[in-house]
Length: 563
Image 1: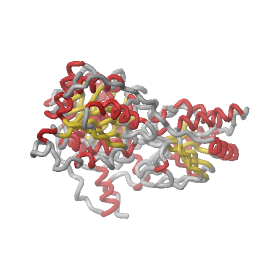
Image 2: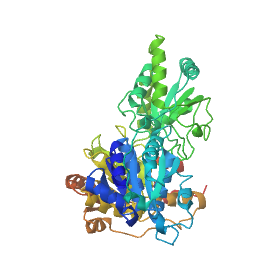
Image 3: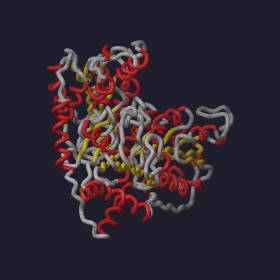
Image 4: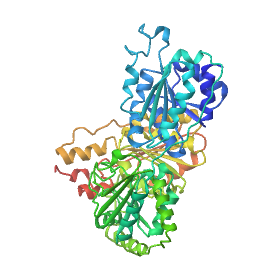
């Protein structure tokens, strides 16, 4: 058996459905064997950053490991940015890269670094673990460890490299052991202390982060909240862990960028139970989040404790393990359900918030504002729709947009890398072909990786991409005005993305006026059959996203003055 065939067999044993790549000379030996086998299926992207973002989004939506195969040098280094994002935000990836064929490795061959360890060293700080394979018999054990490392503890990317000529070598036999994931669990003393704090609390609040989804603990979260009658607010990246119609739902907590109800509860709580939360700069509304009372911070990684808020009790544990132990101990000790009247309190808070801050302000310009697009899209698409959000003003508009189910909202609030939107939509669609997928992308993000639309065309993926076209980096302009009082760095070229999409083989729609908006969104939905649809929406470049209006006390960028 050739090594390339061995690798195909192992990838199938790990239940890899797709691998993401850009076909290249040094990876041909493996790619050809995979193509002949027909499984896993190859997704040949336009550019390596797209490979990384597709892998992240595929993983977030499917719950599986995202796998990529990349040539060394410019190939794998082209994907460093999304790999770093996966490292920061906890996404399990296995990145297989080549080094030059051994016979010409130090003869100034293509894609080669001067020294043997140079390429691997690049990935030491942006991956959980790095492996170097030099002989065929190492492959089964190393790849098993790579997949296990990617999903054990805090998930993250794992890098492994091997010489390009190894694919054509032979191996007589092999044994492959698929290892179970391991995750930390809290001890009995910690559980007892948490229960003591819960029982003595009068105004507890749960803050649920993306760690709940990573752990697969959505049902345990609801059972726990109902058992102890505690309101549940989510972080931006935690949206979907509880349905917005649930009587204990308390909105999105992101400081001045989130819901008023969540902000009210957190700032007046006597106990906050933070589950799988990172407390990032953007996730806390640029640190405008206020937390009152005791903080119990449960996270799978102790590295997160105390970075922003100092916890009263830090619990290094998998969220699902933690919640199950709490519930089991409470039931075993015959502790009855607690009644705090939380549903009634929340109902009154939501009613008050709705009266004081109406959700549909009257636009001050004839041009379309981004919140109008987001609201119409949310009202048009069903609860199963998956949204992928690039970085920009439109992303902030989605912070308080309702998300109804887990793994249907792909966004970044920690690493915040522009360019993820279009490739993320493609990765999400591959993970859930049965669901509608909507990519929300600014023109700045589209200029980075928008050509991945052609990958969607190539594989008949009917994603719908909304380009918020304001010919500017609008959020950068807001920050520049607030920090420096100038308007010098935000301008982008005026591009017709509708025509660009058509040239790539996708459908294109352009919306320039408010009265065209509803018809344009409906048309996009009807056209999304077997290829991507790009909706180019011309946006008011002077409007401030709704969640940022409280932060900057302005609805027009021109009203913002230097602080």
